[in-house]
Image (cartoon, rainbow over all chains, first blue to last red):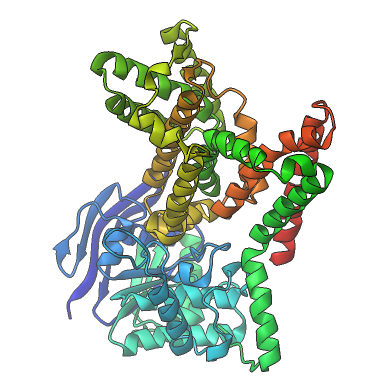
Length: 251
Length: 335
């Protein structure tokens, strides 16, 4: 099985703080990778390098075996990476359709917007993907009026629309109700059954364990270890996570 | 992600539509209400003035000088920035106009040179603000003084007569009187208003402007080139400022080196009166357009009603404060 994404020897520091040190990371085709680690382990930094938001200080990045230099956000999106950020990356005062197409507005060659299509597509997506009843969907609604779960739904719908090869979910269950969390876990499974890949980051080991094929544990900017979920029980994984947090070592 | 299951009746659906429309356009409706309210007040208070065409001709003559700048300035403020230097760029543009004319002897080339310099000086604002990360409020206080200083040093305080433009195509098409009566600059202000509206509401550029003002971090995460957009916004204000400077100078037949002084507060007030939020993310071109004519009408209105000029500032202040308070309250209600 080939790799969609492979990273070798990634380093990143912010001033004095060494956030990532010599990290190797890969995502296989049709694989769900869980990324676990305590606060400050470097999870968000790692995924922001994958999405092209941060430049690594050192290391190599390959998509489908091809090395990519100077990865930027538009480049990563063109390569099929879509991200549901922890901070959701929505614009509160703007309408639903503007948020769905944020940074990727449909337009003609001169840059003029195709508002009709964007509105229709927004409506279709919310009905099909998010299972809204048709009359309740209003593409002109302002995001500010949405609940936390609805906002998360918008961020996920946006990731779906652009036919992502690799969906990155950064703490997606934060602030969600139990029912919403369950829908989200179902959504991650649907990525798998659609033949796509995902990186799933969450504080909740149980959530990650239940959907991931493989779990990578980060600790203080280094990869502390990785396990196939079929080879390890949830209890063992929890035990190892505690040990890493205390001693910095898995065993 | 919870599905909103509701099947509203026809009546409720209709009410919802109206409510939604008011929500969407509440701020614009508010400012247009103020415009018509004020107008009615002036008509009742001074029918001899406000039921005759002359006052409207006067407004259409003088408001566009700075109105054409207020329109792109609205976009800068929507993006969460501000520009205080445009009043000096008006004069810098005219210095360039005169210097280029001196060399080439062509008014057309002089006009092109003036607009180019305005654009570049605006762009330089953008480069300083984005490149060095200086807040635009502070940076443009600095450049406002700097460029006024440049004008004074080059001109030595001397103005220039523009009588030589009499009868030229340039003057006639920019500030001529259509049918011997209607001031051409009013048409230009409308055209620029339409162009800026298109850019802001129907173009990618405008979508990014709203986005940057709303949530700059989201814009960056979604791959919007925030720096380039902001720089271009300042350049557009520079371009408009140079154009406004030409309009006024040609119209009064003279370039004064203090050109633009006195327009700062009018222009900013028109934008904020029009409902643009100082916090960025919201604002409309129609609102600014209405705001310009409200600001322009207050002074002649007060005089025509029979109050002395001493009342002008008091009433200015009252209308601006009340309108801005109205916007804030409306905005809270709407959300």
